[in-house]
Length: 99
Image (cartoon, rainbow, N blue to C red; front, side, top):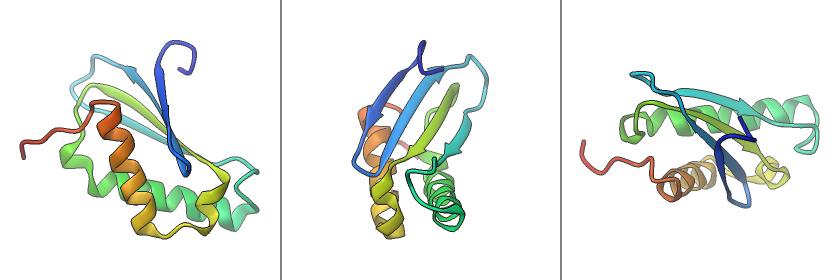
């Protein structure tokens, strides 16, 4: 996916995107050991999942999206992660304004 798709970076997250031609979007969330031990990695994935879930109505369909956690996410609040998620989706032009 990283070779064929595009990616956008934020200090807390990286968003990798690839078109899928499906009537829905698919999501992946990953955190490497650079984020911290298992507790920190699991928290990072939970924060990213929740941010994407709450923004789901605004995300374009037909895309494969992978959110990759960066090390500073270990100290970030949920609001910071949600803002980073929305920022990356806007930069990738996957944010729908109409609702």
